[in-house]
Figure (cartoon, one colour):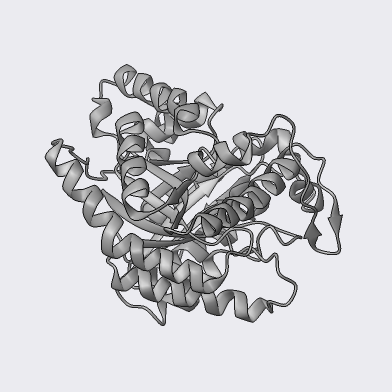
Length: 372
């Protein structure tokens, strides 16, 4: 299993400057790179403290200039909020500037609060995302292309800057759990689904894994060949008080995410209120559902996650709700020094196998079939 670092870039403490928030993320990435993590991911959200990252390509490029082994990924580019002719060029440019270390995570988005301010209908998000993905694939893999979709049209166009990775950077897809059209696209192209159970047990998203398995079988593919990433909040500590504090901080982030998803958030300035969610789990259950505890406990839960989801990658979210930096660094150190070796040893004992990522952009083929 490969391990990644995920940064939501959340700011809960008003005493933290925006610059300090990013400096601490840089400290986390430095340690993660030393620990052998594969990719550092950055979220995209807008207009409040849930995330101070409106453009994930920016920190990917900034930190790629500081750290030279770890890959950098967008988790995610909320594609309906972009102009397609621009973002396809920026992806190519970013791959050049990172020297082929860019991973392109994409998604449709889920926060109406954001979409209203970009003057885009959330109800159109999935279909817009599919068209945007077409344009990204065509722009990065074809010498020139045209596009005529419902939402986007481009005359004959060529992208001057070409990505280092051939035919194009990897595509990972987050969310879209209830979007069969997108799930089919993921399966046909070999893209990597990116899932998270948030504060729920991992079993809550098993049905999504099952749906992908069915699409794989329907396309004549073995589901065991599907790469899959699971994002989990992790805090490694032996201290029970610190464990409960980490759970409460992660709960804040999950509450805010749900309030923005269901459109009942209350925002003061840029700060989202900590509002209990309908039917939320008890804090004791959340502490179990998140990966919180000593190294042995966290390792056991990661192995349990694998038995349920059979994922090939795990993205570690270490700093939600303003977890103090000292605790974040100690947790990340324990993750790299103790948890991951235990997990890898146990998975090897169980004979776990992890599929390679093999992708095939399909947009040009779809165009040819449509023209026949």
